[in-house]
Image (cartoon, rainbow, N blue to C red; front, side, top):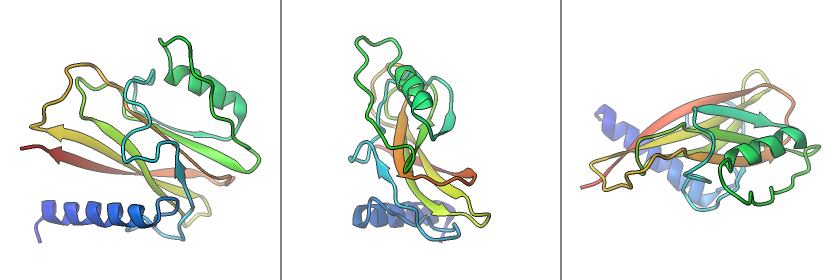
Length: 168
């Protein structure tokens, strides 16, 4: 099986698993049991495509002060800023992933799942999506995704996956 077909097979198996159990997916090739996640946007698209997060970033939020500041940053340049969803940070934490500024539409980023890591922490899988041969908007975009998961005190690492969406 060639590399591209194998990558597509891994992506499709991840998508199938996410559809069957969107709140808790086991990422192929990662140790430990699945940690349940809930993305703030249920559809398989980034939470926001025109965020104020113009640089690639991976952020773990465990307190309401950081969350409020980050929410304002996500909606930077818009008025009014919608009210931020509230969370019980004694029980939950958030993972915010930003792709950074891209030259057009068609790009996306998703939190695909989380697992317990070997060192007692959490391994979060992030999927970055790029368009190829697609008709997309000719505007700068800054995709961002947000997911909540049970609060865990250990370290959080990120497993990066890339996907190219090919249009014909």
